[in-house]
Length: 301
Length: 319
Image (cartoon, rainbow over all chains, first blue to last red; front, side):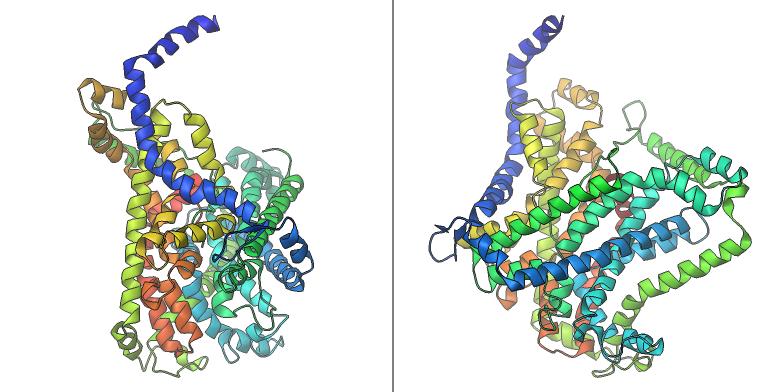
């Protein structure tokens, strides 16, 4: 039966018409394909291979086995930038998701101005972090708004950006500011899937807001929350722009992140093999965290 | 913001497409139906609408967060309009004693206008190139049968998973070997290989009925004519969404232009403004540069906002 059904399709595929179709299809894909080979497939493989070499653009790469990785393991700067990156992520990701969730729940029902609020919350997402950082430097400066407010409420005085403990939280605040609007939109889209009848029924049965959230809203949001957790973690692991502009990795490496180290290794010292090894470490780290998140948040899709 | 680390999810194809029997009018009707559907969704039963106190609380909360969100933009604009050295808080935030001296510094300098031109070239060529390449490839992947199609498509898509920082170094090496450092083509070309764009195009075009293309073929249209006269007009919605995002990614891109544009003349605005910041240029001048760089983004956001927000909601495309 299946063979019979297969027959005419095969014949057609071999016909002159089908051959022409195939030629045109390939022709249309060709430009994108060439660029992908040059700038995606090639570099992906080369990126992995370079991690096992000593290479500086001048002479050809020398294979050095696991040298780069043992060097990485023994490099205190790597552990420090890993710590900074993880700390930044641990503050930024939950902060972003909680803010996004809260605002999505608040702007969920249309009311006068709800669209305006959503547009405002999304504005930082489309804004370059480099540009935003130029004004955040002032906001966090010694006599700037943040420091003033913090000293009024009895917190840390002086600029957070100059403090080796508070510099990462300061950067995380900027990170949350720039990302929560995206999460809010994702969650708003999936809040539409919450069954209205169920919510009404729960309400008539006297379920409080928390119970309604826990048992009716939260289950529908699970896939979106997982998606956000992965995306935001990946983005946070790659934090660079704001750090480069606001602190330059300082004070004393207190905000020096993995991508910053990769950038310096590659483009300041032209130690391209080592820089590639850092890139691979970042990749593996991202994968591990994504798997853990998958296990924690839920096995179902 | 790196260019090609964007995650993807499914895109919903257009529910209805204008056909020959149902010309432009149906699109209007579609819009009206959508509006109605939207309104119906918003008519929440009284019980779920919340109490008056709850509403006031919600308004206050949202207002505070909105003010905090806007504050950096406000500070950026006001401080850029202040004389040099006016940085004290809260005095300098008041909107008087304004001067445009920082703007004449910025726009009168040699660098910033050049950076603006570089950024425009990078963004516009980037958008046009990405849209064209991904429309061609997306159409072929969606509607043409050719050997290796599935394998090729999935290998394209798998590139979304490889983080940008792994491919960045070899890409730089390649561009450097081809003498592309400090050139426009070296800056732009790698950014055109955009897996997410190809994926979204293919998903969208797959949702279009085959009959549209077959009818044109029977009428004797060439493949080129079909692409220009039928495919391109039909994919306008996804072009608008994708175009807005690709524009934003290019305009805001930092790391790649930082690496490739090594001379002052080849910097983009983000790289240039970061360099101003590091050269201890007065705050009002740096911020004036930021405002100059921000205005086009703000315009693009105002114009393309619908595409941006709907695009995020429908595809999870990264902001």
